[in-house]
Image (cartoon, rainbow, N blue to C red; front, side):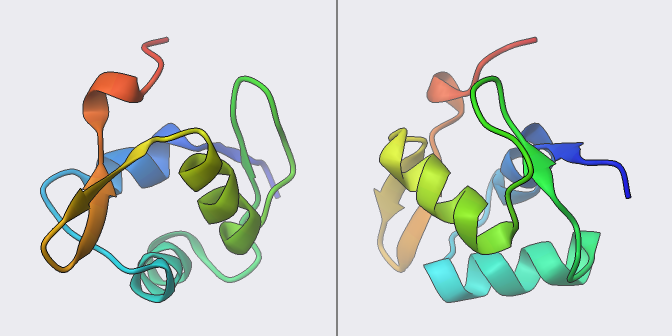
Length: 77
């Protein structure tokens, strides 16, 4: 299976808020249980690993019921 860039998940998040559990659920529902993801600096991550990675990179922005994507911190390529 071909890896997807994390942008796919980040664009899915735009305008929505998530908890870590609901983001994983949405990712699995949208992309499949076995989907792997890559970024500019990491690859072959499952949904859980991607969430941890994005959280550590400061890509998530707190909102009332969890977090959303801070689109200003997403690389643009």
